Image 1 (cartoon, rainbow, N blue to C red):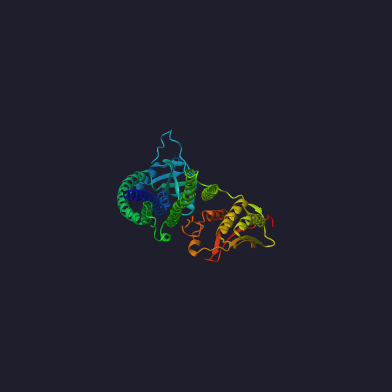
Image 2 (image 1 turned 45 degrees about the vertical axis):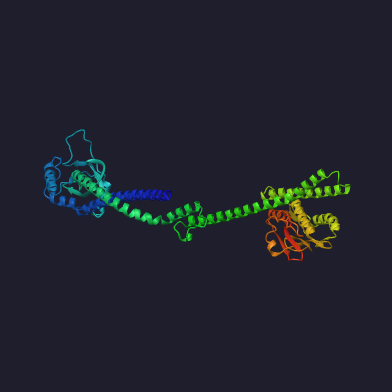
Length: 500
């Protein structure tokens, strides 16, 4: 539980820190944006209010006075009085006299006596746009005191006594910049500190509560995964499709179902394997005991036994040895099939020809037991596409099984028939049949022989047949009733010729 809490707390802290930083960045961006837009609004308002200031100046000051003296020089006393009057009203205003090409001819704020001071020019394009719009457009012009800076202004063109030029008034001069900078620094500092404190308090309080609820589904998934890891295989994420992390939740539930099914299958296979080993060990022990017993009898009573008795004992030893060899061979074959160490080598072949060869071989064995073995086949059975060796092995096991349980005078029938895109193979006998309970297990496990019973153990023959069918992606089924014989049926795919 401590690991779970550590993981969730760490995740919540990380998300909270990231969210807090994003809020702070957004807050700072908002402050800068607000101040910038407010400043622009103030400038636009100031320019609109003072748009006709230059025209008023020309109308009032140039009515009886000329900006130039008789010798063509600048009327400095006029501009001195003009600047004095302006600054008495607004210390941030700067007045400039411009020529028709934009050269700054005179201003009280400029040092015109310094020969090293470069000639200043003002771009006339913004001035013309301002005059054309009659001051109705927010536009910035050059600041003669600061190269590259743009300021709000008022401008007007004048013509007086044969002279022309522009009156250019900067509405936010250096004094305004100095005062604004000081106020801005103090205001921004207070605003930043206040906003930061409020933001941090609000985000930490609201963020932790929000993330607690937002990560509820994630914490539930983590808890479920931990319980599953600790062995609670039945636990699942409730209403997985409705959670915020539905893809993760649904995939976990499906994965858990798959793991549980595989574990059930493993447990089932393990139970069957232990049962197989126990039953095989029992059947291996029986012929071994017989062999050891008769060999000891031959050794102890060798001088007292007749030749017929010796031959009889040797025949019993040989039969038990053959049974033991057959059991070991079946066990080895089944283990290879179960471990999927056998790969089918599919090829086209005639199922009828294979059946005829097997029937001819088993007819000799059937005659010894007085059992008829016959073959029935359709006239035109198509080729099948399968591993001929494995199919032959499956048919041998089924015929061995049928011959083992069919009594004297009985009949075994091997039937081959075409069935759509498949070939149907059936082996029927007239034996004692199989009850319903045994039909569900004869292909899955080793059946132990019953003592004091005429029924013999089936061994691994049918289990091997089922594995062979699985390799061919098909199944085998049994149709049987007690005292009515049994029929085993399987299908093989028909060989498809390319281009047909």
